Length: 106
Image (cartoon, rainbow, N blue to C red; front, top):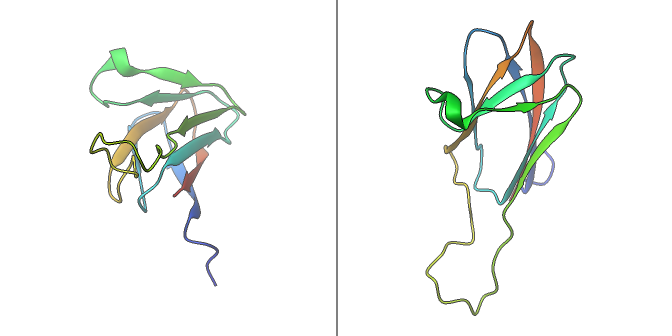
């Protein structure tokens, strides 16, 4: 039996060759990427653009939190920041292989 659909965890296999996409499995407001590997992970928002690259050190967590705004705000913005199927980032291991543990919160 699955847990609450507002809280989803996924393990993503990463290697040194490919840029592995992190794809939202559901509409969500927050995402965290835990580097479960013993090596650094590279993260990019555009797999083909090195200027978007950052590093998630071994054992560290990258968090994206985008809270909902107040109901009275009239900016036409959606409450959800990331939609099902959106590619949020790309990951690559600095060496070897390892999993990244991604948590999605609606």
